[in-house]
Amino acid sequence: MKGARTRAAALLAWVVACAAWLPLPAAAAWLATVERVSDGDTLWVRSLAEEHRLVKLRLLDVDAPERCQPWGEEATQALRAHVLGRPVRVEPVGRDVYRRVLARVQVEGEDLGAWLVMQGHAWSVGPGGYAGGAYRQLEHEARAAARGLHGERDPMRPVVFRRWHGPC
Image (cartoon, rainbow, N blue to C red; front, side, top):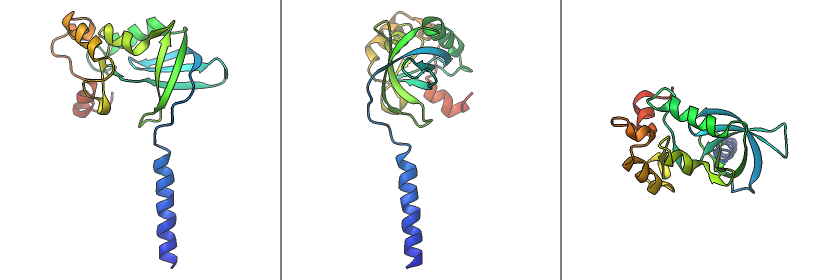
């Protein structure tokens, strides 16, 4: 009997721990100011409603090069120049495996993920971080125009880079 209770308690603890990693249901959009840019697809924003609240966001449906891979620094600098200190609208949709808030972000009504892909600073991604996703047509246009990283010789998708080299 004691062994069964121990197993049940362990199972319950495991379920609770796993539930903490599940995506959050979509929440209402909120306004913030961009405080910091970590890389080409990750921002730190300060909520306008709760000024003490600093939130790390991962942009939804895009994957920018890692900072240590070719075009990584250019993507980071482009995003920084475009949004740092500016007000944004955040539409959270969940959390990623690193517990960052996954969100669509707009700056003056412009979808930031779409802007990154259109400028050639990120790839459009679908489930699992692979090709496809919401911005695949914009990526196709950026490739055709050899914009940004698509002007480089054989650019490597970040998901492949991380698999071969690990994180920066």
